[in-house]
Length: 210
Image (cartoon, rainbow, N blue to C red):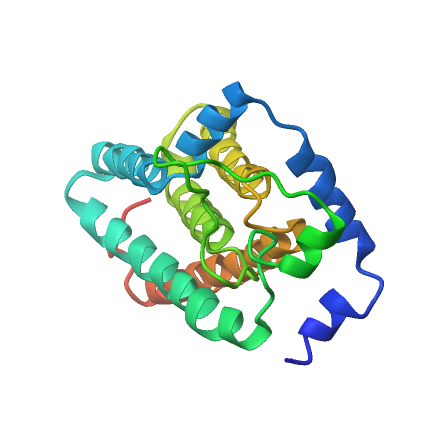
């Protein structure tokens, strides 16, 4: 078992499981339907598409540079989370952890065929958290100088991000700590991206007119 997994199974990590149990246990048939939509990949596509259209509208011919840059940084963060951290940490999802099921009851979202959505085997970090927050931070960086109501933009991008991350705990496929780890990676990726962009912008002031 990886060293990092020690903290999940042998240390005092009760707050994480208790918070998961609190969120996951508050459910209803109505909210199950809502969270199916929120946690789906389709919502991520719509979210990215809406922000992309806003970028095209505000930046016109320069928008493709921004969209390509955001996509590259977001996909890099996603790959790091899925291919580096998850296989290294190997934290079992609550939806797959039979030992956890023996102690707590986990609420899962039911599919139309009667089976339950469980996700992949490993849970830490949450790639939903990485992808949503990385793209949200980068979109906000580029779009906020161009919009009058920054608070509305922030409410939309970060509100959707929070709701998506909440849905992963509600669906029983992530612990809160998985979300926090995903956010940490997202902040690092977005920070790296902005640092690289500003460095390039100093050398090429006309690259993108913000």
